[in-house]
Structures are given as structure tokens and as C-alpha cells.
Length: 253
Image 1 (cartoon, one colour):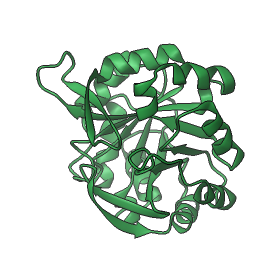
Image 2: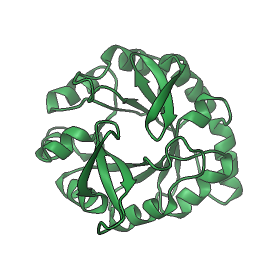
Image 3: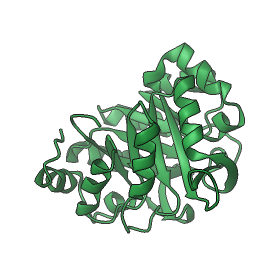
Image 4: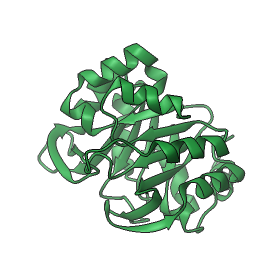
């Protein structure tokens, strides 16, 4: 676990607007991504994650203009994912202001993509995004999905995490589809299992509903915590989350 834990607001974007749903469906408009990014930067966010949630489904590239405008407004690390299929896609995202790039569906379809990105840009640029759901009867009890959680695979989540790290992934963004948008707390079992197999930082995602939900995810092994709807709705601020974590003895920036 990292000595200093990060708090990361996530901007799920579709058609140039921030959206949020429950369990990856019933998306609703939550605002302008640049305005929200500016607000979270002012609140003290350590990083921002920008995910174009329909790029892969629509078979198009991510929205470069929104990334560029966001990067011009905030001065903290920006991770961008959605529709990344090649090292040229990564180069273009870095060119418009991204600091790190998330890959998911394309890497599952062609795992060599991870090697290619890590070889060309370094592991520090590459975040493996895992959209994970419970699957009783499988080895770990969890499998990964593709296409924004719409397509179930038979790929064991822990096995895939191990392979991706060996290929060069520098960070794991572990999102629980089952917890996503429910505000019932992070899937601590999933976080703990990922921590056991990972030699790189683990970001816990999915399920945050109140300030007290974040510290348990760090205790379970996460190096960073990510949330979306609780920030977008104004129910929580980054500062409130950090205060709650400090009260539990967790060091934050």
C-alpha cells in the first residue's frame, strides 16, 4: 500500500457530457466535464480519471477535444480511457494532455497491446482498467467484462490482472460493476484479492456512498480510491473524503 493515498474523482463521459448510472446502465447527465474537472481540482483532487464510456461500444476514438480542454484547466495527473486500441491512440492522448492512459476491452481482445504501450511509453503511462463482476463457480469468483460492462467474458479477473502486470501494466483500476453506483460501499473482498496478486498500485472503484466508505477500501489494500456520482451530485467533496480518511489515521495529500 502506498504511504500517501490518493483521492480520484472519475468523469464518465458520453457525447461530451459527464454521465452516471447504476451497474453501468441507465446513464443520466451529470454536467460539463471541464467545469467538473475545474471544481475537483479546486477541491484538492490528487488526480482525475476521464473515461469515455461509450467509445468502445460505438467503435470510435475517445473525445480528444474534451481531453484537451480538461487538461488546459487542471494541473494534476489526468488518466484517460475508452476506445484506446493502439499505441498511436496513446500518443495522441498524451499529445492533448493526458498523463496516463487506461486500456480495457482492446487489451482483452489483444493482450499484446499492453506490451506495446509499455515498451513505447513506459509502464507508468499504462493503467489497466478492469470492470469486474462476481461470477460464482469461477476460480476467484470474479471475471472481467468488456464494452463498458456490457459483455461478460470467461477471463478470471485475478489471472488477467497478473498477466497484465507481467506484460507491463503500471497500475490497476479495479471497478466493481456489482457495486457501481449503488452507494453501498466498495467491494472490499475484490480489493483485497487484487492487492494479494498485484505488485503495482491498486485503485478501488465502484460503490462509494458516504465519506466513511473510503477508509475501508484503503485498509483492504487499495492505494487510491475513485468515485464519481457522490462527487458529481455534490453529496461529498474531495476535502470531506480526505478529512474522513485522516480521522481513520490514513495519510492523504
